[in-house]
Image 1 (cartoon, rainbow, N blue to C red):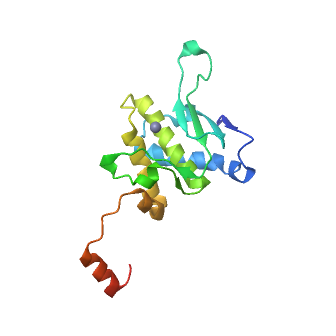
Image 2 (image 1 turned 180 degrees about the vertical axis):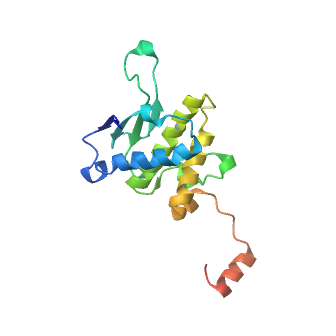
Image 3 (image 1 turned 90 degrees about the vertical axis):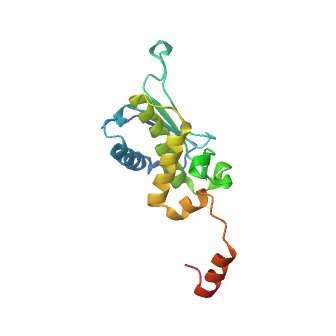
Length: 168
Ligand SMILES: [Zn+2]
């Protein structure tokens, strides 16, 4: 498949070389959720100078960036939307350091979910995008997922049991 991928000079080579496989993996994961969506039409731009990732597509009249565009920040901090119903932890909304690769996978899952929303003409909200990021983390990086979710406060009994039975 001929994918149009632009990688800015700001992206270190060690990260750049992994990008095609990362895109494949993100698409494979989303294709299971959205089997009817064609993910082959979007073009990609990766940059270390983007603060945030985004997805956009323009009208024909604009004449520029006619293909859907997925712009991915290669930074190492994850910024999740503060979705109350998903119990997102405060620290994950303020920029949680999780490393470039995992952050980029989350960004791809998020922005390509917007692509699916456009293609299926369903809500463009951030609930589904955030839920997918969390599901992806839960499946592949459970230790990071745990940090992104508000933890239930430990009761006195929990602490007592932990002390006597040992952690885990
Ligand atoms: Zn979004």
